[in-house]
Amino acid sequence: AQKITQTQPGMFVQEKEAVTLDCTYDTSDQSYGLFWYKQPSSGEMIFLIYQGSYDEQNATEGRYSLNFQKARKSANLVISASQLGDSAMYFCAMREGWSFQKLVFGTGTRLLVSP
Amino acid sequence: DTAVSQTPKYLVTQMGNDKSIKCEQNLGHDTMYWYKQDSKKFLKIMFSYNNKELIINETVPNRFSPKSPDKAHLNLHINSLELGDSAVYFCASSPGQGLNSRQPQHFGDGTRLSIL
Image (cartoon, rainbow over all chains, first blue to last red; front, side, top):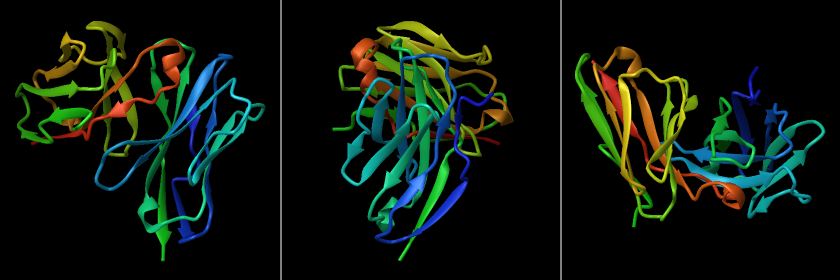
């Protein structure tokens, strides 16, 4: 079974609008962490935001926020006020347990921001 | 200063050759990783080292051999290259386990390996 599922292969959004990228996960661990990374066309992997399974508040980092619904096992990324530079691949990843970080990645969502 | 640097950025070679990719991090992290990103952009962990010790080895063919001379370096050597090895290989590092697990992995810029 897929540990991380990103069901949206591609998403389109207009500049200045908000967009939600979906991520669901599957784990039996009580302790886990969820990460979102951005990969622009230049290829580097850029860390965006982290949510721990015990965190009571949804994570926020500037224009990025995480809609964490533990019971539904979802950790959707919300990008507010989209910019042209947000066009990229976005990956959701999970670390299970507190041990050394073995990240399991989803298949990614390609976001295209249009003017 | 580049935090995680990989060399070379591009590697084009013929089937059957042996090649190495080098990785260095200057973040003082204890743990380093190699990931493979295939043509469909799927990222999968291959290896992880913590303080020079192998801690993760994900059913990777024996032709792939990581080496960590010290905790700041993790190199990847690939023997007898095959067409299916064509991919982008990413090195990454992180502080380690426990509360440091909240810290993200920092990735290098990737090495694009093309097998002719």
